[in-house]
Structures are given as structure tokens and as C-alpha cells.
Image 1 (spheres, rainbow, N blue to C red):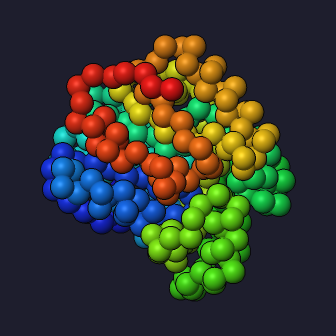
Image 2: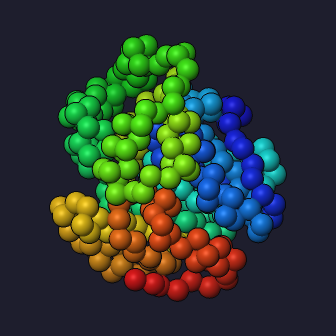
Image 3: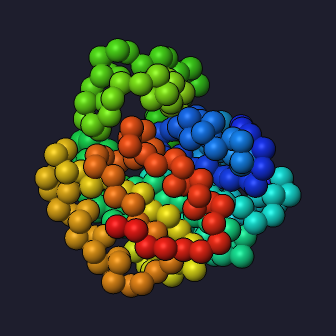
Length: 286
């Protein structure tokens, strides 16, 4: 199989943690430490990001699912729990829907209740304006487009620690308190590697709402309500969650006041997560 970089924290039932785009498995370290007495947490770098080898082909749900499954098989993990954030959540959804018998519990960190925007300005900034065009070229020409773009974007330059100014700006925009665990994750940000854009474009074309509606695995969805942070996003979030709840899925809902990085929210209910991973029944919490 392709090389997958992973760090393992703790002992017990195996848990795979999949980070957001632009982050390495370091993003989940504080969560892993909180769960380490009961669980063996595998902090993975996503394919084509950080130190994991990329997938050099057009990526869809099948390739995402197979990538996680191959890692679990290589470590002889058996049925696993999966905790995932943002882009990692898309990969986790693909795995859970394609291989439901291999996933005991799924924890989604602010992912799955909303479709990825067609023009992702909030996610990618000004670069988001070019995503629809690049995505169209990608569908027409495939990996050839990715190879040309990556020739300009992929670099062997080492990461540099984030500046105080950028760190403060990140925390202010995301509504987070300035904490060392956040700085460490930003310092260890995942550099784009060969094949990384294949994953990003695969995510862009993924039908996340369809995957959510097909979930059979008991799932805990912890989402930020964006109240007091972004009024438009707060309205969109509330509407999306109400719509998802109509489908009577095996999902436990936990709303947190704040933004996208719910696992860094001071109110993050880590004990509720622990109980969910250890439980045999699914309840619905609002």
C-alpha cells in the first residue's frame, strides 16, 4: 500500500483520527491524549498532505474509502472507531459508507451536515474563486491538470513556525482562545504534496449529503453553530441540521456555540465522546 504517516497515542480499542485539509495528524493530538487511557488513537496525515504519500489518480468515494481501509488492514486493527474533522470527515464518511462493517463508531467534527460550497471563499479565501474553473478542467483533463498545478505549488521547503500575528489572526477569525495545542498544530501544518490536489478535487465533487443519508454506522456529530461569529453561516447551519434530522439517521447531534474547530472549543465534551465510543446504543441529542 501507499505510505501513510501515522503516530499512535494510547492503548485500547483502535481509533483512527483524520485531520482537516492543511493539517497533519497533530491536529488531533490533544483529543488523543484525552482518550489515551481507553483508546489507541492513530493520528494520520491525509494522502498527499504532510508525510503521507498521495493518490496519483482521480479520487472518488471508493478511493477515499479504500485508502483508510488499506491502512486499517495493514495494522490488523479490525473494526475501528473513526474521529474526523472537515476534509478528514469526507474521507471518514466514504470509509463508513463503503465499509460499514469495519467501523464501530464514527465521530464527525463539524462535518457532514452541510454541503461543501460551490465557491468556497470562506474555506480557501480568494483562491476559492478559481476552484469551479479548476474543477471543470480537472474533470475534463484529469490528473494532467493536477500535475501542472502541483509543479508550481509543491515545494521541498521546510515548514516555518507560525508567526504570533498569524496565530492571533487565526484564533480571532475562528473564535478560539489562543492555546498552545492550536499553535502546535499550526506549526506542524501539512504541506501539499504530490497527489494532494487529487484529494481536494475529489472532495469538491463528493456528494456529502448523499453519503450522510446513507449512513448505517452509529455517528456522533459535533457541530459549531456559528452564533455570534458569522450570522450567515449560523442560519445556514441551523437549516442544514434541521433538514438532516428529518431523515431519522443513526446520528447523535451535539451543538457547540462557536465555529468550525469544535475540538478546540473550551466547551468540547470529551467525556461525552468517550461515552459514545464505549456505548452500544445511539441516542439523539440536540
